[in-house]
Amino acid sequence: MDQTLEERIADLERELVERTAQERRTAARFHDIIDRNADAFVIVDREGRIRFANRAAAQLFGRDADALLGMPFGFPVTAGETSEVDIPHNSAPRVAEMRVDSTEWEGAPAYVASLRDITERRRMEQVSRSLFAEQAAREVAEQANRRLHFLLETTTVLTSSLDYRDKPRLLARICVDHLCDWAVVYGLDRDGEPRRLAVEHCEPSKAPLAEELRSIPIDPRGIHPILEVIRSRQSRLVTDITPEMLTAMSANPREVEIARELGVASFMSVPVVARDRVLGAIAFVAARSENAFDTSDLKLAEDVARRAALALDNALLHEQAQLANQRKADFLAVVSHDLRTPLNAILGYADLMDLGVPEPISPGARDRVQRIRSAAKHLLYLLNELLAFARLEASHEVPHMQNVDVGALMKEVAAVAEPLAGKKGLQFVVELPDEPITLSTDPDKLRQILLNLVGNAVKYTPQGEVRVSVSRSSTGMVRFVVSDTGIGIAKEHLAKVFEPFWQVRQTERSAGGGTGLGLSVVRHLAGMLGGTVSVKSKVGVGSTFTVSFGA
Ligand code: ADP
Image (cartoon, rainbow, N blue to C red):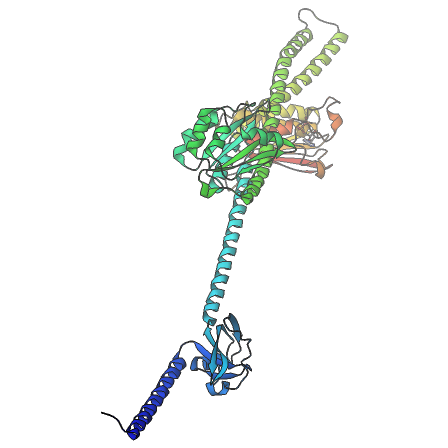
């Protein structure tokens, strides 16, 4: 059925109204969607002014959406670009990621900038960055601390005693505890050729293998890498060892086999040098590649080797000094002992001649014989002192402890010393305790201590008195005191009088006096019996020596 023209026009008008309404609804819905979007949208015209801003944009800029309209946008806009922009905001500046695209606005070309607030994301990133930096710093500090601890321990452990023998093993152990999976400490023998002194592994089950490796000699003309380290005095770091390299390191298949079983992924070898002398080397081995060494490990290893060198050198020097001392003491003991035998014969025959055996001698000759006797006696005294000293130095003496009545022992000493004091016109005073005092000690050694002290007191006292006493304090301490009114000892000499061969008047020895050994023997013996000796003295007034034994 044909429509009339009026009807057709009316339909079109209706349709137009309907479509316009629909378009308006669509535009409103679109507007609403844009407005509710979580991202901020801003339409910017070609002049850079804001023509539209949604709710999120208003929030992002901290203003009403209406207030933004017409304002300059403030950021350069280039279609297709994404950038990060800092947006001033009343409370706190915001950071947004901005994407710009071309659009049209009200029939004119424009830009749409979509902005996503990434302030929080940036803040979190910043926080995690600083946390990360903090953690890294803490790790560095902890590592430095561990290293310092390692170095300190190296020094403490290695210098705790002067005994050289256990040092290589201790050193290898510390290295394993702190830096590597296993370690080898090398020393040089008399011919300067290296040998393994200690091999330590972190796994106790590997100890037998480590010990076997230790006992394998190193061929000095071979290809072992330690030879080059010792020869060149240069450290070596190998971060990654291939099986071929390992095989090439030794001509001994068993050595290579053991090394493989102990695990070799990376190693460092550092020479141990003290006073410009190579003492040996240390090899640090990492069994697994994840523990491979780097240059900072090598620095630490070199530090350890430097400290070890000092400690080992001291211990070696001490050992050599001990050995030399021992030889000297042995020599002295042999010589003084052997000299005593003919001397006793001289004394014996001189005594016989003095007694007129086999026939009386003239008074003149007798005077000469007397002189021979007293010179020989003095010589015997000197030899006895030397022998006592030498025996102590050579550590041949051991105390034989027993319960001793010290009052009775004091009387014995007084009986020997009194006539000597009497000869010099000195008063000799003995102070004994009312109650008997018993001390667990070696009576022969204690007697020798007291005889030496009383002998000195008489020797160095021209006039006055020599006094000896023994007492027990309330704490149970037993004290022997030997005092005199003699020449005394100057303050600056007090510490030296106990040193062997030291005498205040160094001419004393050549003048036929003592040996300078008596007080050294006294101190040695007192120490052996668990006691101490001290001295107080004033020049021209006198000296007091005190020997104390704990309860
Ligand atoms: P010496 O054989 O010379 O007596 P000592 O070791 O017994 O050796 O004593 C060392 C030095 O100490 C002596 O040479 C002397 O100078 C000094 N001395 C020791 N005892 C006394 C004392 N009672 N009075 C003064 N000087 C003393």
